[in-house]
Image 1: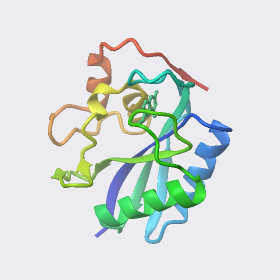
Image 2 (image 1 turned 120 degrees about the horizontal axis):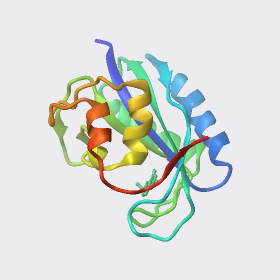
Image 3 (image 1 turned 135 degrees about the horizontal axis):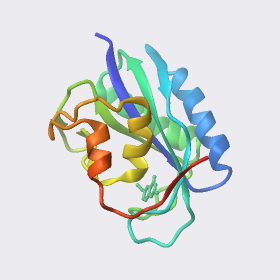
Image 4 (image 1 turned 180 degrees about the vertical axis):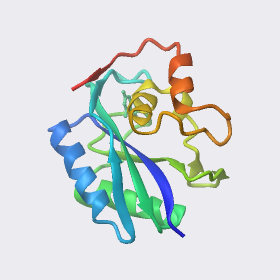
Length: 162
Ligand SMILES: Nc1nc2c(c(=O)[nH]1)N=C(CO)CN2
């Protein structure tokens, strides 16, 4: 069955805009998957305490027949094979980070994957682009719309639309 999945994209190494554009193109090539919305791109201050360069972040909506773990496998494969991502410290710099943010109404907590993304509601760099393409989507655990979660954020991190 086709499901609506939302993917968070982030890069802070190399040509960040080009990498986000490439990532959107690669997502569109996944089997049984269409890209049905792309958010604006944002330049965002790094979150997590590791000193590093600003990120570019965006969000994409996919209509996909891939199961969550299949989709995760495909995203990991893109990160390593297309974007040559190397293992780095937690919160550290990365060539391309592709996270499943939401997958339909699914709530899932497994060893290698949690959906919705556990830190989605705390991160302006995720909620801002997500609210551009899905403001009225309801978080299946918190029961609040994405736009509400964004308005309730108090963290001061800067996100600038490019
Ligand atoms: N602004 C911003 N900060 C981050 C990001 C990111 O994508 N954007 N990703 C991280 C590693 O998961 C750590 N910090």
